[in-house]
Image (cartoon, rainbow, N blue to C red; front, side, top):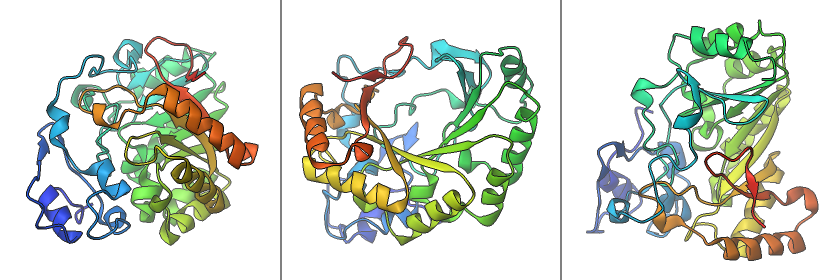
Length: 315
């Protein structure tokens, strides 16, 4: 992370785009952050590279667009303890950290008040809540990105959870195996393999170009540890909103050993309106995926709405 790009001009220079004049530095509360390992997969000289477009700040982020809000999926109303969201039956989500390895410009939690509401080191309230709700059988580690915690912190967290008899699964939502695959080290894999529950890791890749040999190797290490690995993608204008890009993403992820899981419509968060793909277009693209791909390669097309009891299929 010490080598990550934090200034747009620096990243553009790395890509041979130093002559680009319209550099927007980004918002102070959501500055640019791009690991070098991810930037190395971007095409030099291409300002429209689909990986670059996901992370490069844009002046359009300053626009106020009706319907785009700071908390588009109702996270704050589902808070039940510090760092704990209980939104769906049977599942509790832990905001394990506010840190991420990459700042995706469409992130639905880019305005989340992490400073005052992530799990931190005081686990008592969250663990007590889960213990007192026997209907919770799955804990989801989210953030931020839970793999930004060091292995010692992850061990301490799951050690506390291991004493809760009604838990059946642990799920981890993380972008690090994609953007910083070296994070998937032997110690992390040993920790996951020793956990008392089946472990599901949901990675987040939106374009086939996000996969390379390093990502393949990281996923292979996870799977060798007995972890089930899925991918969820967001449908993003100018990045993957065409049939061929989506087909290639699903094929490439499966070739890596990752099962396509969800294809999300954009969460309408302030600053991200430029990425929106209308539902009608999404449905047509999803239908083409059904035509061109085997059924197990077709992700579920969904949207998340505040207050809904589950992620809603787009029909």
